[in-house]
Image 1 (tube, rainbow, N blue to C red):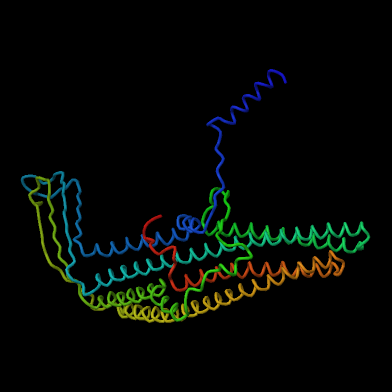
Image 2 (cartoon, rainbow, N blue to C red):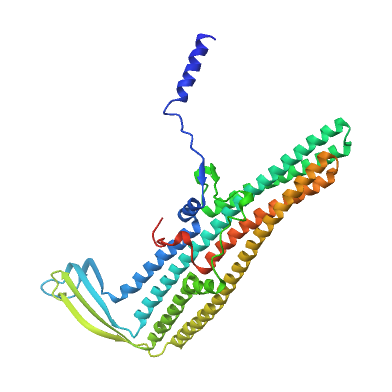
Length: 444
């Protein structure tokens, strides 16, 4: 090695330990709790609804401002000429005007408007809660989909390994003259087909990760993350699956008390009722007080300081039936919202019932799939031994291997389908454990 090459090698070695070298980030282990936290912080839909709620609070404050005095000020400066005015008839004139107006009473116009804003704001707050619940469900659904496809990759990989072993046996038996060439060809075909299924499983896993990132609103750790899980091994899924949340009547009662959408419609009905009050106020006069003071800076004798205070009444006796139309519109909106509440109530009952039945079906499917998997594993072991001893053919083994892989897949799909339907029950009844002590109105 030359002297120059030695220096270069030493420089590269020192550079590798330099504090200026970028530190390699560790792979993030993304569990469900972290995924939910990331989604709450980054999901754009939640930010949209949070800003809608902030805007509704500002609207309420705007309506409340109608109760307060309104102060105004103005001024001007110019040249004024008055014919034959003594001692001067022309001068530069500056004036200052101060004014105040105060609403006294308007027969429910303002109070109705404030109530409309307040109840509309409360309805948006319930919509905000519902959006949080929806996002949590989307996170869980996407997260479980990633775990499911990850498990299916393991199932496909195990099948590939089994077919590789079977191909090896077939090749050995062919050399020994125990089996024919068709066993080798058959094993190669099955191995190729299973490798294709493995590629498809990996593609499904990649797609599931993309869907999860879309719900999260970001790529955690710049995409360098591993979806973790506390899920038990495939053979233990049956015994360690979560329990059902409770009987259906109790879940329906819980939904009636906690579902944000139901309370949202209650607020919308109150807002519609307040809108009727506001519209009916147009039938009556408006009482208000006003005052003003105007000061002049001039030598013109006709322009002196002035002030005034007064109480006024305005009453529009006829508006071309506009008030009647506004009242009719408000009452129609009230009836519409009331009907929507009844419709939504029925949809909640259907949603809770359907999610409960699906969860119960998936729970039973996990049990059945677990039993079938045990039998399929035993059948595969027997078929493998029969083939090795010459009592069975390759077709029997292939059927046993296919049945075993199918039952593995069925158990994985049923288990994560069960977890997903449990999350759907939580959303349907309006009780999300991860949001038990969560402040919906605090910016994350």
